[in-house]
Length: 349
Picture 1 (cartoon, rainbow, N blue to C red):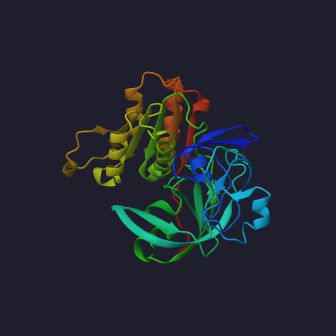
Picture 2: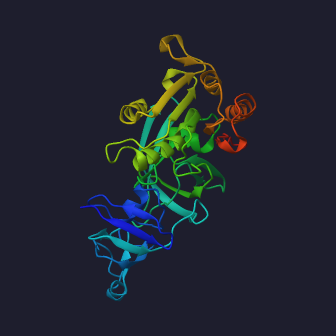
Picture 3: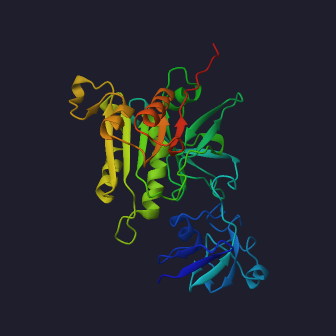
């Protein structure tokens, strides 16, 4: 059975799906509420039920006392609506209210998906979750005091394991460790979430072009998965504007997670994918697009006047895309958002 939830004081209205908690409903509908562990132990998601009934679910009794329940409080990560609700809680506005944390994480999985790309899956302590906006990144804290930045490739609603896409740069202290000595159950420390690379609207009405080079695909994957989760056909229809992903790599072997992208294409009719190879090899037998990835966009669009562009990857690509899109295709300057990946190379002998 579905119910309606009204949030005070914002007056936002949520429509639940059967079996969802209050928090799950809010995250699915793009409303950011404060939360931490998502298992009823931290208390960060505690809010007030002004009207209606909930099932309180399983939680730590020290986190939600009987006195608090009598006063109308509930843990939104556990509480399931049993009727229409009116609740009172604090909503997060973009990134300003998201707490930046320093946390440990255990390496849970290492998956080599391309010759020089490793997907590193990190598991947080049982009582912790990292609240972030799709597109943000974390800093891995190294023992010598240095840090290395990596975008979160998983979506915020799928935060049980954090996913990083790590490219093996020659001379990269951390990246070489990932490809040579890192093993399952290793412990890392990180700080995050950080950055402002995220959709400026829940989903604007204008078409969006996502432009990635190399592992710049990682934060775009996070954004797209969250958009699909929020708007992608939960009621049998696709509520998406046109979304187009241009992904530029050197050769075919550097394209990874193609099965996932094919699944997006099959499930969401408004999503398109254009891979572009800059240095295709003879053995690639490549019949697709070639050259620089941003030039493929220039070839496909006579104007970008009513578009948004989210570009992530190498500094050269991002700079060229901004200059050419705004100067040659009338893209509004405030319609271009970017995250530049700059390799961190050790200067130590």
